[in-house]
Image (tube, rainbow, N blue to C red):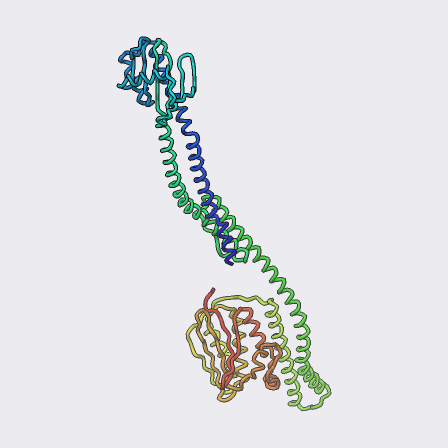
Length: 499
């Protein structure tokens, strides 16, 4: 993990972006410094040559006009000397000074003579440009370790001119410029580093967010979304990833739904085969006894085994009773079959559960009185739930019917609510024997009977609790049974809220 983390840091966009900016700034500063160091002095010298040549042209033009000594030329002459930092001496043919930029004209004149006629061992000369009118030289004074640009020649009016400027100031200016550039460059690198860090983080933040989104998408987590302002390409990429996420989620959902339906179809096919076998076995077993009784008593009637009226009525009652049991069992089987295969329509609606339970109790009141059962219902307040009202009535009827047929001394049945946060549990308790632990899970299987003799006694088919389980499964709610020391409690749950 640490190696992977180091690799991520090494290839971080922030570091790459910052490194690129710093490299560009540092490279630019170094290039400028190299160019300044290598070429700035030459450029300054070249520029100074042009200034001296331009000054010579102006002075030569004034000499052609014979205006070198005029007052109008005073300002122009001073500008040439001051702006170009040039010492100028103009001498006539007879040796008199026409114009001079310095007060110490003797020294300047002596230097002029040295240039024209002298050959000092301390001075070396390099001719830069030579025409019929002037000579431009570069002189190096080894004694003073200084360099000069010197222009000397003849003006249009025949006067001699000497122009001289020191190159040391140029070299010093170049050195100062390079040092200043170095300071500015260091500050620029530091400042650009700070700015690039903040800028790169701003740029990298949405990219890192998109990276995290894509990572979670690889794990099929489509809940996270990119939230951008849509102002640049990264925001547009984020919107496209959001659309991709929604499309993938929808497609995977459709695939899962199709796969789930296929799996359900396969399970249904297997279940149908198993149920068909089980159904044939159980139905044949359940119908065998009533069919045998009907056949036996019908044969007795046909053969006039007992000719008295009361015997014939008894035979007919047995035949009708067994036929009615068979009819009830077939109806329950058809109901269970519709519930198990999802063919029965579920209508979810809001209704008062208390009113429904009171109605079921009322319809069973005669049977309760006949068996001397004391029934208590712990509320008369409305309890509104969401379910299929007719199927809930069937569940309560089955629970109450079982409680009536299995109640024992002291003959008490309790119906109560247990209110939860968003659902209610309805319990039907009857005093009597407990259900064996090994049978607690099996009683929901159709045709399963704990006490077959007793079930047969009251006409039970072993289908009622299977219908209850199928109904509660269609509601996606639970049901169950709890053994108590003095009896058995059956329960089921219903939603009290719509969501």
